[in-house]
Length: 359
Image 1 (tube, helix red, strand yellow):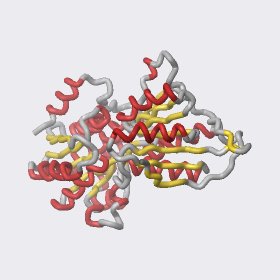
Image 2 (image 1 turned 60 degrees about the vertical axis):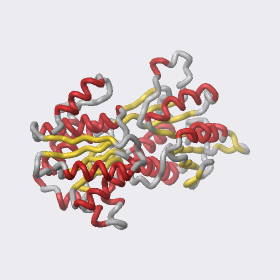
Image 3 (image 1 turned 30 degrees about the horizontal axis):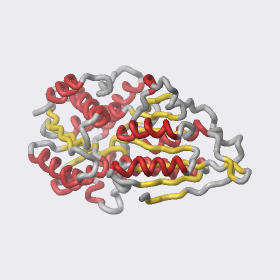
Image 4 (image 1 turned 120 degrees about the vertical axis):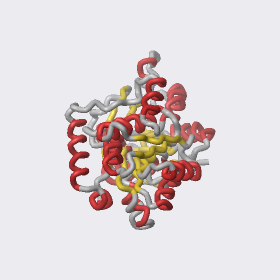
């Protein structure tokens, strides 16, 4: 049922080095960390970033790691997560908002299992029974990095029309879009933003179709946030020889060797450092400073979101534009710019804000 993709190197460590109560195993303490991917690896984006986090944890923190890829069939997610719980890993990582309800269910049967969820948060306020006391939630301020992506697109467009393609129409993806719109409008108040949603994170053909349509409608730069489906939008950019902004991982550099033509069109990527956030959480566990039963939100100040500054960015984005982006980033860091967020906004207000930018 499950496919084990990587097992990190491990060493036997004493209790003093790891504070998360590793299981007894012939008198030794052996830290074991597992990750369940409720999608597919190879997206050069979100899931690959999480997988890279496990490599960092294995190589730099000397944990035994296990990554299980279960695909987009949600009927397989619960059995795979239960299998990992039965294996008694010290820490289990899982991500996306779709896993929140499942983790809530799992904690009833595995109250002592420590689980870290990323890109979503457990509902701690309603947890009167204390079922989530051994969970930890990592959310991201993707709206902050997306603001910078909006500034980039607005500075680089030649026709005052840009595009956005999201995977699913959910709060996290809307948070990307809201920040993107605000950043673009800050630079160019009359700019127009075409926004579309694939409906999932796997249909690359649909994403390509949407991207081709947006380019045909006059958008000359598209920001795509759609995991595996995003590959289709990237291919549309290559087909039309248009710029595109990637997401989560530094996608230009990931395509540099295999598809240099496409790489040079990915003008930047809005980095959402799932890998770094996982590593930081494990460092806190190692140092006995992580507080279970709480959520954190990581953004620009924590180095977990921002724009990829690579050779493609340097070659294609004028120095003056890069300077403007850096200045906006500083203002966000200092709190001088409050970036809008879809979290806490009424749906009607989100819709109105998106519609205000449509052509």
